[in-house]
Image (cartoon, rainbow, N blue to C red):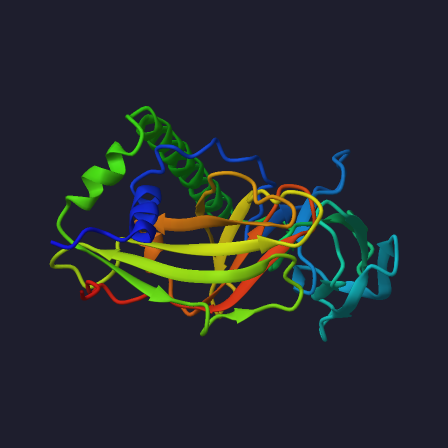
Length: 317
């Protein structure tokens, strides 16, 4: 058996649990779809909706919005906005320089005059994970619908807690042991060079020098159990760059968040590497996809289009 390449070892270590990874930095929780129920009388403040530069967010209402009754505060921070033909939706697109953490308040007034007469939302800038669809309900919904959504939310929360507990347990193992054990398992690691096929965005603040994608397919299986991407990046800026989050977005806009691994911040005027990946059923995400990386609070992002993963065939000698 040929020894694995250094790149494969790095990716395998990540996919086996990233035993040496640091605790992830906190980032705002942004769902692809959000739902809000409006009470006739409520003292709660305007809810927050994640929004990303140059990406649309569509509000869908169960009541008509009055013509000309849409306000933005402050104004001038949207590239475009448009109400739906029937007055039951509103699509907004932040400008290309919309910054993470930036806030614009959106207020709509409904046409029927019933309470609540209006609704407000904060568009909060996020480097990559904007909410695509926001469903807003003024009318009471059937109990079974609310119960179904509650059960789904609770199941998602339980899964997140289980994933966190598993990762914390794995991190208690001796460094590198999990990666070594994983390499001994049955299956193949396939790799694919991306640097020529992937589409680099002009707005990227870091230069992509090298890009490889990897997949692991267990013996006897036809679909991957784990996938990952390794990027070599150069930082032309004056401040170090630290990876805070990563996501894959497919052609339909569906998004999946990735685990991430970085040895150290990429220094100013220096170079470094990051690895991102995912395992389990979510590794069978339909690609080519768009890969997005972002830092914790700053506006510096990296976007790579046309990212695909190799079939599960071992690399030849």
